[in-house]
Length: 607
Ligand code: ADP
Ligand code: ADP
Ligand code: SF4
Image (cartoon, rainbow, N blue to C red; front, side, top):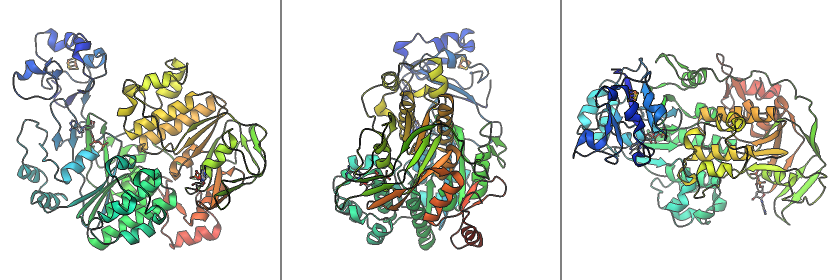
């Protein structure tokens, strides 16, 4: 028996009425008469169990472990995972949802006056950990049949950073405010305008100030269901920070925000922690922002959906560096085969490819006294990934639409209109349809080995193909939308904020998929994104937009990475230094010696 392995059965996938129990029929212990795989009813009789009586139960005592894995292959619905837990993992789970269900090892440690970050993939147990820290349920220490008991949990954490926090939780002394991950869903839960929402939670009498600092005054009387994603994100932040709580949990603060807004959000969170002796716990996948925001960091790793491990706190710098390197030193754990690396120097000045499109000077006005965009003539090269940066509301999407048939400029004329495949910022694919049917309706290449290698595999679509679009998480929906965009035939692939809701691993995979696709298909991509690391890893050249959001925007022709980053970051007044060990760019403290030196030298990024 492999006592360090777990068996996980996904009850949403296990469909015994549609198979012949191939798992049990082929399971070697079963074939020798043991009850390794049984139905839940056979195992438990009339006792309470989760799932249907006919769904399977796997005995982890009898199972031979991952090296066997026969049932995993035999199950037609991918419902089974057999996983050898890392040997280094000495602890017992803090919680297991049920028999053959997800287990969580370790908890993050919120600390008074500090911002604690969690860094790790989606589906690894971060939300579960927060439910526990918010006393929404008492963890069962890995035994789903045990009566949950806080005393036993506190015993388990005696002498660690968590002990006093958990004692406060047990005593009912911790109040919690949380910002949900998917702000797009807020309009379904709240009926009213921004002012009504914010006033209903203004326990600290700070809403007025937050509204100004987050620049949401202009939407204060607007109904919540008319706000854009970026506005909703800022309203949700204001609503959370206005509460008077001991423990704040913020699940992703950056989606749909531009860099300036991200930095403001980070400052507000830090200020509240410091001034009020409150604990802040933040899940964030934009590493430059996480670096700026967190005092310490818990890394989360494991097998999404099967088990997750949350490490004890590390310094933010070490946590991010180790995460990127793929190796957690204190835990002696490899979490990824290779490191994610940044170039210290800008890529050599752009490749001189053929020209895909030239455009002359253009002006676009939406009407008198409405937004105006001025574009200086330029060209887009075949086969390049053009990064597009600039604040929200500055005309980036307007420019993209000018390149298509969808918008005519007020002044100037584009000769050749391009056929563009577009992934919008707010992914809207909520149809009652399965992922495979949706993608098959877009390309007749669907299912070909070429399509699998170039698109489905890099974007990890395998496990979600049979799910309904309406049941997908934000990150899953994003990956399907990127796949849909790249699957069309087009002159130009335009992706607006592909990083939103992707975790760090998925950002890296999506970056590779987009790069590889352009390289292998003579395709050209324009990518609008606010995650500076993603832009750095993805782009050959940059197009920088500047001006006054919602009033006027301007842009000059695409330039090389060094010039583009300098232009973009000088507009924002932000410089980056290099981490000495890994060359990872890190935001400089405003006014620090390096910040001043780099500004004087005009080197904002590739210093
Ligand atoms: P994260 O916040 O890191 O994305 P979650 O804590 O939400 O992860 O979920 C971790 C895993 O636990 C997921 O695979 C999820 O399906 C599973 N899970 C969450 N809630 C339950 C539950 N009530 N019963 C069984 N499994 C659950
Ligand atoms: P970005 O992509 O940089 O966020 P957009 O190009 O979407 O910016 O928008 C720039 C400005 O133009 C915004 O203030 C937006 O409200 C305004 N705008 C966009 N489309 C229209 C339209 N059809 N009519 C009037 N104003 C518009
Ligand atoms: Fe049976 Fe375990 Fe092998 Fe699956 S992995 S077939 S449960 S022994």
